[in-house]
Image 1: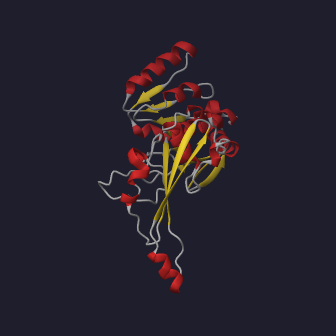
Image 2 (image 1 turned 180 degrees about the vertical axis):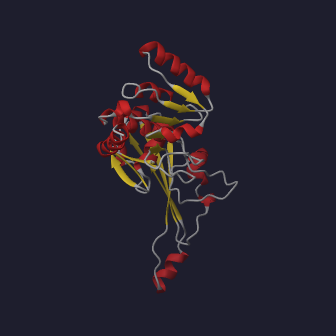
Image 3 (image 1 turned 30 degrees about the horizontal axis):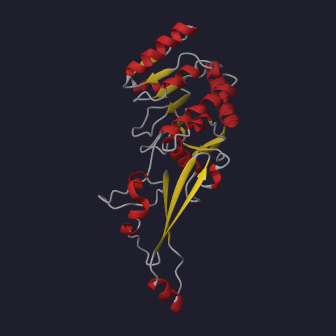
Length: 281
């Protein structure tokens, strides 16, 4: 069972209607919907007073309070036991799936300098798949052992080379950089580089940065998704809490960030332009 929590505060009214509304008791409505083997319990708290009294929702939410699907605008009191669900696992897959499709579309992919900033080594499978399109990817990681196994496998199976290092400054030479976890440091990147990551970086990045991934909610799941939740966030919960691992094969239609948005084709074209210019110098 996955639990979503929504808060509704009716618009303010003046006069007698406004007074009557303030005197009404807040209410808690619970619905359970099912789609493709997933049960979603949706708890909706309607507040007429403008306050949210969590003790009224305790019974309805139960043990799910520590992993609630809800808007990021909801802030729970410390020590209440209520926590918003968050996992980067699904978004990391969207990031790498999108990047692989971009590489596939790039005419000059073999000339691209690809960097992977992956301190915890969560995207070793991406490095192997990327070798179908590029040469010698650069891996920046603190967890060398998984990538050493990946490097040995690549060398044995195809003779391809992978560079593994802790030296961040080497990212300055890369055209396309992937960071499959949310960035908490500023990466040393070229101004013309493209950065694909997960969630808005916590530190400023000086390259062109994209971190949200857009796609259609799979049939069935769109009927149970609370309206205030983004498709990416909702599918992240289905993937992580609902064991809907087939969602990990989705290829996003576009990516976006403060720089705007790009489709697979438009981003591939942009990388081709940058790469061709560098190659012709």
